[in-house]
Each structure stands twice: as C-alpha cells, then as structure tokens.
Length: 252
Length: 249
Image (cartoon, rainbow over all chains, first blue to last red; front, side, top):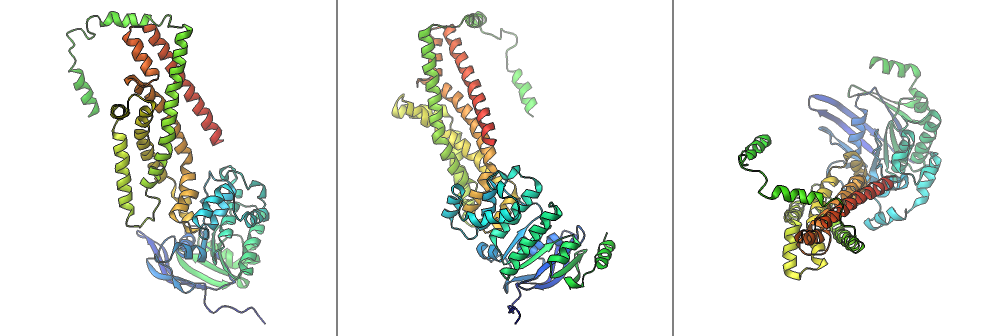
C-alpha cells in the first residue's frame, strides 16, 4: 500500500499578483503543494522567485489573489505563533544576529514555541541543545557552536541559517538559494538533510536552486518562473538538461 | 544663521576699552606662573588623592543607578515591549520620552542645589543629582539605538515566532549592544567630569578642593588639583578604550 496522502494541500495560491509601483513582480500565480513534495523553484534573477517565497512566508501580502496555508487564509489575522509553525523561510541574506554566538542564532528557531522565561534562560544556559548540535554536526560546523556568528565565513553562516529554520521545523520550509555559498560537497549534504527532514515528517519544501544535478537528485517537482509568470510546473522526472538550457537561454 | 549670530555677538563686546578688566592681566600671569612648580607636599598630595577617589566613587555610584534605570526606561521608550500595531504603543512611547526629557532637562547642578537643600551636603545628594539627569540622557540615547538596529534580523526573528519581548532579548539588545556599551563608557567619562564640577558647591571631591584653594589664592595647589583632574580623565579614557576593545573581542 502506498503512503496515505492527506487530501488537503499544505499550500494553495490562487491568482496571486504583486507589484511594486509600476513594476509587476508577479502575475497570476496559481499553484498547490501537498505534503511530501520537494519543489524546485527556478528562474533567472529578477524573475520573481524571491517575491513569491516572501508572499508564501507571509512577509508581504499579495495585491491580487490569495494564499492558503493548511486551508486557512494567509492574512494579517494569523497569529505569529501559528504562522511560524506553518511556514519558515531561509532568505538570501541569512539575517542572523552577528553578535550572538552560533548556538543562540540556531536556537532562535524555537522562539515561536518557547515561553518568555525559557527563551531568557536559554541565553545563559542553552536549552534543548542536543537537536541543535546534531544539525550543526551534520552540516559540518559543530566546532563553531559557541563562536560569535560574525566570525564565521559566508558558507558557515549560510549553514547556521539553514540550521535555525530546521529547528523552527515549519510544515512548509521555503529556501531562497540556500546553498549558494556552499561547495558542491556541502551543498549535497545540506540538500540531503533538508529533503530527509521534509520527507520523514511529511512536510513540504520549496527551494530555489540553479544546479540541474541537485534539482534532479532531490526534487520531485520543478516550477519555472519567468518575468513574474508561471513558465512551467512539471514533475522532476520530465525535466531534461535541454529543457533547462532552453529556459535559461530564452530568459537571459 | 549660526555664523550671523556669532558675528553679531562680537559687536556686543566693547572693543575700545580694555578686554581684560584692570588687574586681570597681572592676576592671569600670577596664576600661570604658579604652575612652576605646583604644590607637591605629601600632605597635600594626600588631599588630592582622597578628593580624586571621592570624585570617582560618586560618579561610579551615580552610573550604577543611572545605567539600569536608563536601560529600563530606554527599552520602554523605544516602544519595543508591545506589538507594532498595539493601540497603547503610542502612549507608552510619549509618556516615557516625556519623563526622560524632564529628567535630563534639569542640569545636575540644579538637581544638586535642590537635594542639598533637602538633605544637606551629603554624598547621597551628589549621587542622586548625577544619577537622575544621566538616566534621562542614557535612556533617550538607548531608546534611539534600539530603534535604529538593522531591520532584517528582526523580521527574520519575528517570522520565527518571536513576541516583542523575545525580539528584544534575541534581536534588539544583541544588535544594539556595541553602541550601547560605547555610549555608556563615554557617559561614564562625562560623569566623572560632572562629579568634579558638582563638588564645587560643597560636596567633597576635586571641585571642592579647587574651590577652597582658589579662595585662599593658593594657585599652585589649584594647579596640582587640575593636573590630577586631567590625569584622571586620561586614565579613565585609556581604561574604557581598553575595556571596550576586550569586550568587543
């Protein structure tokens, strides 16, 4: 018997559009994502991938259309706590707190779940340290756990940002070029960790990537965005190198 | 506009008459020559040392009150203890900023005159008179430093589920900390100088001794005290730079 798929999609976007002044960043985006899916989001720079990820994460609101998370409309009325458990985003700037040691930046992923007292206590005696050190260890930066985050290299900081979102453990994990500063070996390790976590917990992962190899190895579905519109939305098995070449060429 | 005001003020000086009042020129020279040599007797040096210690102690005690008080008020005044769209936020900010403004608009000398009238020439009067305006100054600057932190880490923490207080603990304070410390060290130096001035009105310290020696026209003693004051400020400056470098690591 196959895995029982839950009938309700984790994410639905209906005719979503977003513009900044006269520039239309996204137009008419409609898609739905189910549990267990690992979706690659591809497109040239400026095509609207980051805007789409920010919209799904609730960082910005669409001008037209709506987004539903777990069947519930994503708008200003959703509580911070519910939102942080439903969706989490690793953005391109990492947005870590440079002065804090790595461990606190990683454990900050728990701030939606911890009470005020526990959050305060953890600054002096890190709470629930094991899962954090486990993840850092898998990503190869276990030895940096008490270093001031500002002292880490770009690739190391990127892995800290990945670790933080893994600790947050949202149902839908969004990642905006999360392995851009990692060498191919480390990029595979990170992707493997993200995909294993997603599949074993029946969550969903939407990740913007450039590498055809990573896309074909880890993703089940590929969505191409060009000039703010949906170019294609196909299973990963149907993606060929030729298709990718054509897609990037026509958009450069 | 400032330049115009400056030039206008120059016209208020009576350039035709002597600029220095009669006898002033020779008094000035007497004062300068007392520097070579300054008063160096052991008993007086002892007086200088105790006066310097008292000045530093009063300043430190005042800062020990002013820093936590300023930090609490500064955090409240930044508005970051309630949600961005909370209705009470505006009132909280306005009330605390008014309070901080009132505290610092009255100069420490004026506070000192008030407290000395109330409780006499005691060290407590000096300490409180310094602590209140300094808490006001620190609180105002702290609240602005907290509000001026980069927005991105804050937004990321917010989307990780952090409430306003947790945002303060994991975001605002760590991000603002280098500037908070830097400004606090600067204010500590100011507090030492202010403490020296404050003691002019009779509370013990360097200023009090300077005032005593001036009245007795013992200018060489005044110079010794001034040298002590300068050395003190320089030492505090070096110490705080060193400490700041070690903390920033």
